[in-house]
Amino acid sequence: MVCRCDGEYNKFIAGIFGDCVTGTKGVVSFIFGWISICCWIIAYFPQVRINFLLKRSEALSTSFLLCWIFGDISNLISCYMLNQLFTQQILSVLFIGFDVVLVSQHFYYQKSKNQTEGLSTKLRVSEAVVYAFVITVIVNNILWGGFHNQFGLELQEMVYDLCRTPKELEHSSAQYIIGNIVAYLALPLYFASRPGQIIKNYKRKTAVGLSLGMFFITSSANYTQLISLLTMSQDRQYLIQKIPYILACILPATCDIVIIVQWYIYSKTDKSEAKKIENECIQENKDIARCDTVEIAVSQSTAKDYN
Image (cartoon, rainbow, N blue to C red):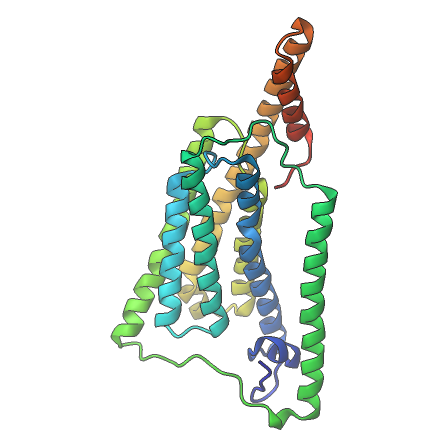
């Protein structure tokens, strides 16, 4: 919804997002903040896609999923209790929806016997074209809407209402205190989700069924959020107040990098093992069906698969 702000502000951002952002630091922080949000919106998709194609989900740690969903529930509750921006409230609901899909897949496929063996999850060209088209349409609409609304603000600024700002709560009120406690509770939950996944990867010694894309995107989301926090202000008091949120970005992102390294190590092991079995099949001329399955696995492990 188009709205205006008092004083100097970025009319493009006010026109498309309804937020009052001032100064270069504010704009940079806002941009990186929204890059982080976009990363979180699509972060789940690569793993959901792989689970759907393989009809299996044993690569994911149950503790990873449960900590993640409880962290998002805490985030949802705190957003409404602390009167956060409408966009933040909507996003918190979306995150819960994505969690439900991923967790439902996890438990459903664990019980299902219709698992697919040896199916390549490599991104097809036709599929990539569809994704590129959708992204282009979304970005084009955002840019067109932003410039159109910015032009309207510059021509007739006073006909628009002031942008909505969250109602400030009394710091001594029960709603504010409980809301902050719930918000801080999400931080250890997000961090606690990663060690379980790292341990499971170490025990499995394989990358089959695990999406590199999901952890690459979540790592990017955390680092862009960190940049957003640090570019907003370098004031000492501000940084002290943001320490929990800074740690909530750094610690999970560091664990994500560990998982990404594990993925590369175990992918090489998977490829070597698959080639070894394939060579044995060819030399001994046995189990043709198994050789065909392994051939797909070799092409999958050799490919630059970032899904």
